[in-house]
Length: 171
Length: 236
Image (cartoon, rainbow over the protein chains, first blue to last red):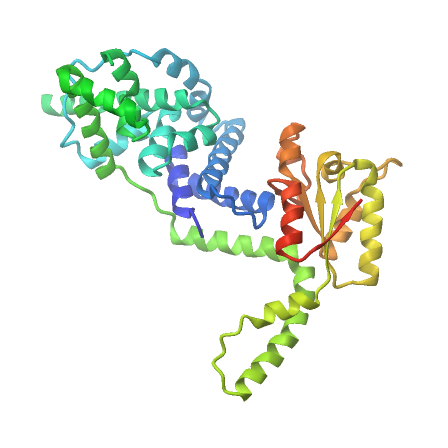
């Protein structure tokens, strides 16, 4: 089954729960089949991941209506303002250090805690290996926004890691 | 390049998304500016740490099995009628061919059965480009299948011809298209909707009835069916 792992990985990082990710991926594959039948586009992976992402968002809008997981939804409506303020020049970390020994658990937790808009571009870029153009298509945002979200996302990730590491060393 | 420009472009540089000339400019700046060099190194270290440690969640085996099962069911519902006719036709020729091959003791590597069946099969694509013609088209297809029940029929809807495949669509007399569509569907007719049309007319994918499925371009699909799958063409 092509791109199933990529689909599950994206869904798992977006919704952050095994059960929800499985539900989203299953629904996305059925949707893909229902709408497109045997069609295999040139860009099958990006196309499928766009359906997976939409399905994750739809499922969460639905569960929000049922009063579950408000946090995910609030983040959906905020990224533009957060991203906009970050365009161009944000201050660099004064304590900019080389993160060479960040431990596994820490880095996974920090990524998982990033706001959704930044988490998704980072996952698509670093884990799924998608190009800026593909990411722009999937999320339906301009190329420049992909770039600024990645910049902002990495900046936030770095800051979270540095904060955690300082806390550890202060112990 | 100055520090501010580098700040803006360094991520694209890290991700190999910059063109050659800009990359060279950026590298020249990195060579002469220690602050930017440190910034670049920190980002690269972060990315390497990510690549090394961030977990890729592979799909659980149980999920894979479940999706495969569901897709098979959905596929069976969609094509059951058509497949039964096709299987009956191929079963005979597969049997005849393997018997023959066994008899002359040749290795069984035949691409033959599918082709044999394809040659004897009648295939027709109906093109509906205007909603006014939908009713006539459906009637013609039904008449066609009454004479040749085994014909493979595809209906490609495009332009205003997609209207009858939207939820709640009704004909000029106000009766819904639904029953004639699902009846033809049950006889194995395949309904395909042009996605370019939907995009252009800003029709949401969800308003297409589940009996139909989408193709990226109606015209390209018609051309493909004719040139690659041997379909005859009928415009309505």
